[in-house]
Amino acid sequence: MFDGLQGKLQDVFRQLKGEGKVTPEALEAALRQIRLALLEADVHLRVVKPFVERVRERALGQEVMESLTPAQQVVKIVRDELASLLGDEGAELRLDGRPTVIMLCGLQGSGKTTTAGKIAKRLKKRGKHPVLVAGDLQRAAAVEQLKQVGKGVDVPVVEPEPGESVTALGARALNLARQRGHDVMIMDTAGRLHVDTALMEEIKRLADSIQPHEVLFVADSMTGQDAVKSAEQFSSTLPLTGVILTKLDGDSRGGAALSIRTVAKVPIRFVGIGEKSDDIELFHPTRLASRMIGMGDVLSLIEKAEQGLDSAETERLARRMVEQEFTLEDLRDQLRQIRKLGPLASVLEMLPKVGPLKGLDASNVDEGGLKRVEAIINSMTPQERRRPDVLNGSRKKRIAIGSGTSVQEINRLLKQYKGMKKMFKGVQGKWLKKALGGGAGARMRM
Image (tube, rainbow, N blue to C red; front, side, top):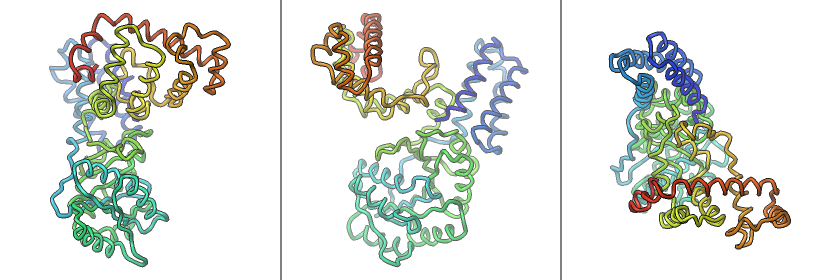
């Protein structure tokens, strides 16, 4: 995500740091590069020009020019201005009605149907009893897709009757929701490949009929300015209350995220970060801005760890490291814990691209590598896992056949394992022991 923008901004910051002291000339050169980076990331021109002017005005101030670390001050200004562009923190859905009506809109392929299921599951966690309504009567198999989504999150779906219009469906579903005691109704709607008059007239009639409390525009973040233009057109027809950006885990250039609030004047409320029903979260502009400039998103990573990891197992593995008893079995268990956090690429995206982590490239991550390592370790005997020094040529050949890998991959794993043990030995008397003594909260934040 944001790899192109991130790389270009990092190059600009490196050049500034190489200057020692930021001169007006060096700053102007940097601003030209920042402008080009934003335009190449498909950020709207109406957004880029005032953004660069705000950065220039703040960076030419006395605070930056007289600072001992002016380049770092410029980095901070760029991050702050990016966060300002992205808007306010995302807000949870307002649940005012009985039932509260939530309507999703957007173009075809933006992820509305999948997002409807994610919202339903999120509301169930809040103790609500939602119902889904299959209002996409245009796309083939859309109703069946929503039924499968509803089944996956254990939420009922109201289907259209033969020949029923979407407006009639909405009114009937609203009555059913009241009768059956559902406190939230989530209405999926049809999209098109582009905004057209028929689409707008249909969706406006539906909104007038069901009077939604929340109207959320679902935008594919990978489409850049196309998402922004369609959001602007939808906002002129419907009382949009927010945007949900989908596919932020994909190859997003950043244009939609940075432009949509300014151009369409609609706040970003949620972001989709994966394909699973849990992969939706509140929008955090400061965290996203930090990721855009390569500073990572450690807070989100901590939250993922606290939700997905077994704290007792994490503590056990940490103690094994400290006590120099870390075996290949423990390495396998550690990899299983990491996989609970989601795709490795999305985890690496949250790490800052500085220091020893600078070379990590989430776009080139081999997700299958973790599975192959686990297969290799599972193909060993208990003795071999605990004492890998017994592994000779014949044993390695047997393990390679059993795991579907090669002897070279086994040797590479053993070399990495020895390197890890050596690293653990170097820190065992310092911060690792201290972290283990600091309680569960401290352990989760190692």
